[in-house]
Every structure is written in C-alpha cells, then in structure tokens.
Image (cartoon, rainbow, N blue to C red; front, top):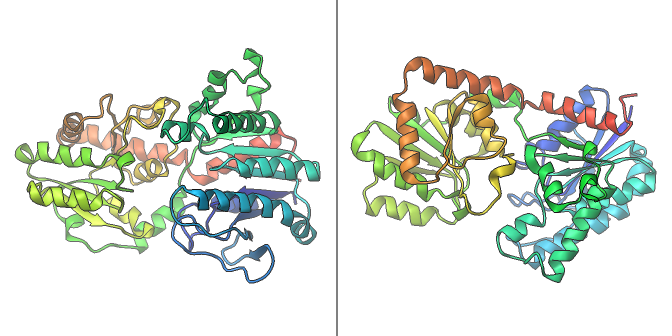
Length: 424
C-alpha cells in the first residue's frame, strides 16, 4: 500500500475538535487502498484538549481508526500574539526532527500532503518530501499573508511583508501540486503575476480545487442520535437560524438589525442564534434594551447538536462582514455545507464569486450587506410558494452530495495521480 503522510498543524479527531478535513480524508484514502498518517500539534488550537507528551518530541495514537502523530509544540494563549508564532515555529522544527523515527516505524511516505493554515507546514512538507525523494502536494486553505494584510496587521510593502510573500511564492513554485479550497484562489497567482503566462515560475496546470465539505453519513447520524430538546425548535414558527461565532467579522449585529425591521410585520418569525464570541454580551443587552424579542441567543452548543438544530430551521443565515476579505474568489466555509445538507435554504449576506448558493440555486446571496436587504430576503423565503421553497430545499440537499467527503477524497486521489502516485 502507498503511504500518504498528511501534515496539518490543527488537525483533529472527532473527539478532539472541529478540524476534521484530514481525518475524513484519511478514512476515505484507507477505503481506496492507501495507508494514511496524520501529523498534528499536540496543543489544541480550539478547545484546550491537549495531548500530553511526557517524553520526546512526539507520540503516536490510533484510537479513532486513523493513526495520528502528535508533534510536541509550545503552549500558547488564544489569539494571534507571539506565543502563537512560537507555537507554529515549534511545530515546524519538531516536525522536521521526527520524520526519521516515524518512517522507521510506518515506512517512508510515497507522497506528502502538507496543509496550511500557516505556511510553515507547507515549507516543512516540501523539505521533508525532498528528503525522501517523493512529491509534495501543498494544500492552501487560507491565503497567508494576504489575510494578515487584509486585517491591517502588516503592510505588504514592509520588510516582514515582503519576506512572507517571497516564502509564499517559493511554496507555489516548489510544490509538485497545489490544492486550493476556494475555487477562485488560483486567480490570486495570476493577480500576483507568479504564473508562467506572466513570466513567473508557477505552472497553473498543477493547481487544483477541492473545497471543504461534510461527511453526510456522520451528519445524518448525529441528526438522529443527538436530539436537542428545545421548545423554540419545535414550535410552529418560521425559524431563522445562525450557528457560528459571534464576533465582529461575522457581523451578527446585522441579523439583530434585520430582526428589528421584521418584528412589526412578521410576528411569527423567530431568529435563533447559536454560538459564542466577543460580541455576544453586548448584543444580548441590546436585544433586551430595545425589546427585540424575536431574537433568541442560545449560546454555545456542542457541534454534535448542530445537525439536529439545522434540521429544525426554516432558513439558515451565512453571515459575514463584506469589508475584511476578498469574497470574489469564493467560499470554503464548513458551515455552508452543513447548511446545505440540512436541506434548508441558505441566505448569504455577501455576494461571493464562484457562488455555490447561486450555482445550486439553494438560497439567496445578497449584493448589499444591509439589515434591510437581509430582512427582505428572509421575508421572501417565508412568503414564497411551497413549490418554490421545496425546490430550494431539494437543490440544497442535492448540492451537498457533491461536497461529501467520499467525493472530495476521489478528487484528492486524482491529484495524487497527477504527481505519479497511484494506489499500488
């Protein structure tokens, strides 16, 4: 069997946290005849469920059907300060140190899939692939440093900015194949002038698109087994659901503003907001002070309950600020695919390029991110004829099938084949 090594600093198993892309890939690759190992940090980025390493630089666990190599990394406080940078650096250097003993136990890799968020993982993947004389596939899930520039934390023209851009270009040049999770991210290489047509070193033929997705079997199983007893979910109201972080970038205040507009004319609409974040307490106070009683903040819920919650909604809100990101290249939000598989229409408060909602005709994408536009979209879906609503519902469910991990794993295998790695 061909050995696939998967590097993702933030990878989880189902019992650990929400970052399950590579866990599901590993399961699918095993079914297809590959042997996979996931390398991840022992320090959880999400919830503090750290894996203890008493001695050495790593530990191997295989308690949830997929072998995980946990790389010892430095602890850090949540946020994006120096402690997180130190954590990234320790993952990078310790990953380089442990590959030889891991190879002696599991065999050398036939291909390495090195996945960002941060680019040091891709750098490590390329260097380790050279060590073993095998191809490296770099998977870009966030465009660093563009995301840092977008938030104004670093200037493109600064020396650190130029160094980061040079490192990013080096990754695209030296990876044997590149996977983007947003369909339009390959446009970024053209915009930077790094493709061969613009005199750059990057062959666009080695670029591929594999979005995030959902495990349909797991979703439906959770929907049946993890029932949340809540009267607000089971009454006869028209239920608008938002599930996610409540932070400035998610612009949940726009939902509250829309609820205030709707309240007078549509008393049977109930807006349920699930999640936690820095804006929660302020928005809860605002709802009370302004008597916006059609908004109910439900707080944090375990992810296992999300499928049941979404199954009880009438429409789901994909809510973002339009000002922080370049939405023209598409969307790779896990939430979008969870919304679709729940078989309910989706309203997106941003009009994205390569729009999945428009492609599958399973909801409404707003050209203007205003409370007024959101309120009108909610009312439009509530008041649309039953046949039209059912068509959106059916389209959402059918579209979700294209993003099941069994389908995405098939696309990943084709990428491996493009660099010369087949099952046997």
